[in-house]
Image (cartoon, rainbow, N blue to C red; front, side):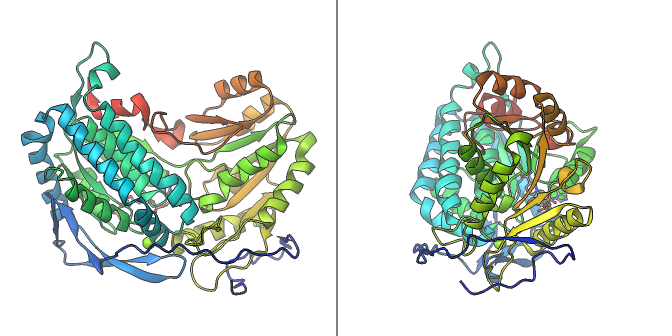
Length: 498
Ligand code: NAP
Ligand code: MG
């Protein structure tokens, strides 16, 4: 890799400690060889067809690791949203809600199998468009995408067992808005339960990562899904709001920033629209002195640096019990220095590119703010490519609870480290945030795990592991992290009327 552009490292006057592992030997490059077929331009997917946008406008989708244009994406406006909602309503009334649930299940199985068949190509595309390492998209995202369709396919004709003595009925037309950090996986989280329960959908992908959604549209066509059951309307501003405000929508599901989530909550208030929100997080990872320390460090690294910290449940705050603080920090520094940052398509890469220029700016400015407020910054001295959007894996110490970096979501490869003495203090500090999506506890003692899990105000608590997902397990937040659950039986209830 070419030597470093220093541009996106901290410009503070306070010295930044460089984390370096000395003379380490390098792996030979191992670039992914599969190349997906990418069209020059993608249209909207409405009523089973690819159609040109009403505005005739297109926007670029960029590869954030090279800043090269991958393709052009159609910009859908209000008139396209109207068309899509109309198609979804018709499909709901005439086909999908009336179909034998076993038949609906068969479509979902077919979609799941097609995703498996094309998994490699989809993973490469996800990595090119979003910047995440191929290791992640290939080994985590895509298997989970297929698993979500398989899991919900199984529920389609068994809903009355999920809700015994009730009569679960679909809601109607669902508007779903998804973020850029897990583009296909978020599409699967939203589409699979909605379809299994007999709803139809208008989906709005994130503007920086719409390409795999359009490949999913091709898969839906290939699976012969009846026209209008799923409509995908891409756009870069105004499209999401038009969907949320459409009067003929029965349910809105949104994953993204708390700010937009609040706007959506305000705009759906007083309407009949059902709403689920999955917003940001500021997860605490808590390490007790009795924890298996090496395992804990590995979990922490995975929880914040893999995927560039672009994870709403990223373990961005680390609370270490005082007695092992020095030891943990030493181990962390060594491990951070060996993280491989660079070409996301290289199979050895741990940390890929930041999703967009805007996100890079946001990360840099929040880290700078942390330094200005008195935190000490340590950064990997790894070489960063000249082109693209990169941020070196970073650690902030001397952080206090009132610092912005301890309170706000950074959504980047930045860990804020703090300490605690007693379990009570750890709980009090971990819960001291407007968010409540996830948390991690590292200890050798089962009783401590239960005690902490019970009192942590977080939707998910992982114990001696981190960022593990499964379609059978519900996911969602407390407080400003949102409401409603996705996955498992709980997730189904967001898409039925009982
Ligand atoms: P964002 O602002 O939350 O979401 C943008 C999406 O929401 C776009 O698709 C946009 O569609 C739509 N939208 C905007 N205003 C809307 C409105 N009033 N009604 C309905 N939809 C609306 O995400 P971002 O700007 O990409 O990221 C900002 C921050 O969000 C990140 O830094 C990170 O902290 C957080 N984030 C969280 C998650 C998560 O998983 N919880 C994921 C990604 C990002 P249009 O383009 O059509 O307006
Ligand atoms: Mg992109």
